[in-house]
Length: 195
Image 1 (tube, rainbow, N blue to C red):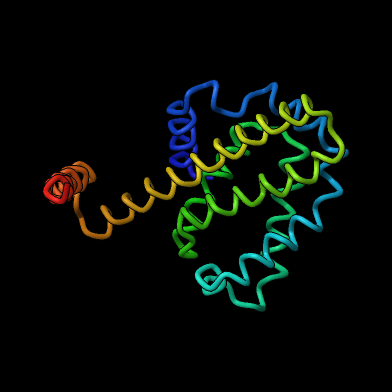
Image 2: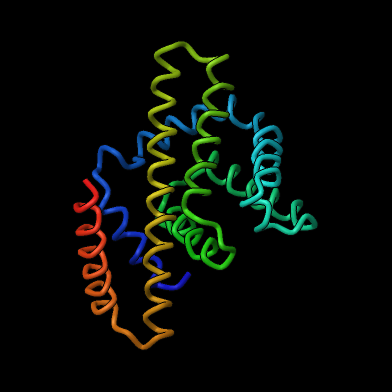
């Protein structure tokens, strides 16, 4: 992968508070959950894409003929996530999803919503097998995984969107930042008048 996305990935990871970020111990815990998680693959993939294809805003992104390929992509991610390792290559892959989402017109609320669905789905399934304390521990690990992946995808999306805009218009990113602040000042003034 391009060195720039690796640097962006590292920067995003550094910006996350360490206690909120997926760590080595989380990786070990997730690997220990594989006997419960591997069997969920078919149900997870079907439920995920049934939801996406039945929700008009997300359904409009997909061609019905590509479902098999999209399902393969999710299966590939699921297996790689369950098998590890959680190294820079893995996290850079998660950041690259942000770039893919720009091209596919997948918005961050769609991505974050589907992460919520994944967490709820897994939580319901593993609650049948784990003790209460094991379930809480597993849930914390899954939430740190989700938070880390979401941060990488969303921030990479924003970063690369702004870089593409800057390069396409010939406008320096610092000027774009300044223009955004000016616009935000105007929005804030409008909102303060409405109170």
